[in-house]
Image (cartoon, rainbow, N blue to C red):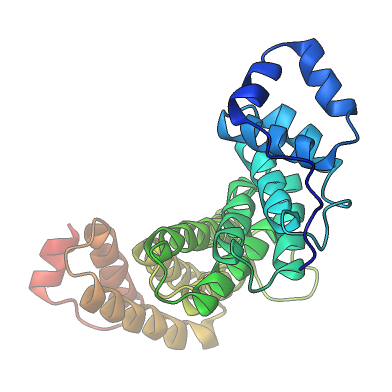
Length: 288
């Protein structure tokens, strides 16, 4: 790398003193001495004056590209925005750093904070989740590059939280279909809301099998199986009530102590009755 021509070592104490007043800061901002502005930006950054630091650094990163301090300046600029909670701008500069210095001194930190900045931008589950998917991709890439990083546990925690956010969105969508029930005004392409709820919930479970909403999703599927059978035409009732019964046993095996077990037992009892099968005493007692 090229090295900047320095006109002398700048005293940190002198810079700190100089930066203490607005007039002095403005003189530094207007200065054409690149090395001097760089040291002043570092001093601002170290003291938590991120707004002043990024104002200085934005004018330096182009001039310093290819020089010794160019890499550090770009990383500091990224982190100024991150610390000011402007995560969108921070993401742009961190991504720029990774592309410019893929094996740079701050590459691991840049990838980490790039993912964390995107994580901070992840919206409410009711909104479009494109930023959440971007965050997941970036965080997973970090683990791919640095599988033994000291930050891997924090990264995994962020990934799990983001995944749960996506699952919650799918759960709410599946629940909405269930709540719509027999209403067919939204079923423009055939099918019905109970089938749509089952498909949505099953897809969520396939994509995120270890979600903390696993029990809730399976219970929603069981409810849908029963309602779908109860509302079916006669020639489909037996088959669909049997599907509800099978779903019940799968649910009971996986969640024997479920908070939903009383409701599940009731669905099982009713499915047996509708299917013309005898109800065992212990199941009837549990369902009552």
